[in-house]
Image 1 (cartoon, rainbow, N blue to C red):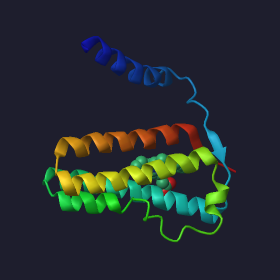
Image 2: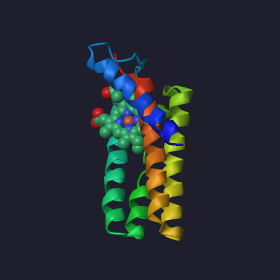
Image 3: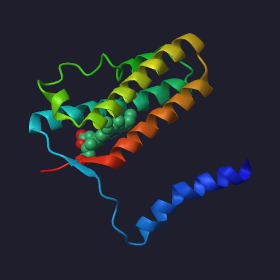
Image 4: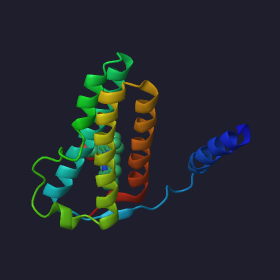
Length: 143
Ligand code: HEC
């Protein structure tokens, strides 16, 4: 078990070391969206960050109602008034990772409100952040 953990840490740290030695960061798929669409996606992203901060702060206070509220803000019902045509403009895999992330926030909201269990919330936050990492590693905006 310990060996696996050490291996996991090593695998996570290796790419960072490679980068530190002056290698180029890995390529990402470039998404070309209209400025309105790009602005909306970036707005949603900043909302994700607000939710994660709020969840952490509320968790430290053991306020699970607030944890659920912050999580719901980034749930599937959240992308308010997405501009027309945005869904179609996004690559399918991007859309899928986006929906998975919104759904995970909704699940966290339900579980936090019903279970009130810090460890469950932490695990879910960690799982959500894997989505952030995975998508950021795969896509960027460009011209
Ligand atoms: C479906 C893909 C996807 C997921 C999931 C995702 N992001 Fe992003 N995010 C992006 C892309 C693409 C950019 C733009 C990168 C660039 O600058 O080209 C971005 C940019 C951002 C920005 C900068 C916003 C700005 O105003 O420029 C923040 C903050 C951010 N993401 C936070 C998060 C957090 C936190 C999560 C997880 C809860 C997350 N993102 C999940 C794709 C994603």
